[in-house]
Length: 136
Image (cartoon, rainbow, N blue to C red; front, side, top):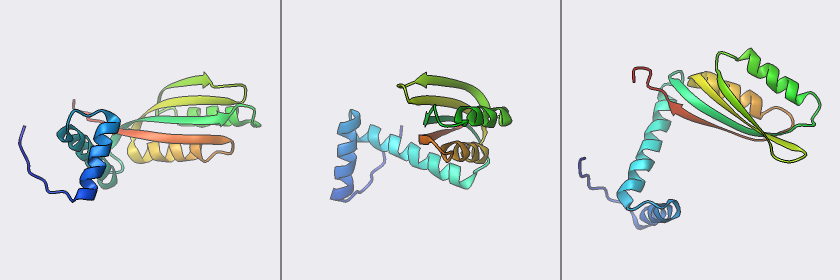
């Protein structure tokens, strides 16, 4: 590893320290390494939106909403080339949680997720993208 000196103002350093304590980092270096990785990941996604990615789409929906389950299933089948696996959990009498594991171009995964999340009676949704190194 290389040692790098970085100058941060007090306010920013306080935020790093808060993050460090909240997430249980052993030191500032570990926290700053993770923040740097996250920032670089975001920059790569913005610079190459069609780069290969793995994704996890997590969403909660009202299972009793008219035809929603069928629409979501049809949507997944229409995009079967992106789908790796799904997990379905009954949260309570009214709500279900699904996790869809995805693989494909980042822009295609984002579009798929946006269509699911914006569906009526989908209450919460979030997509986590991870750049895929096809050569590894």
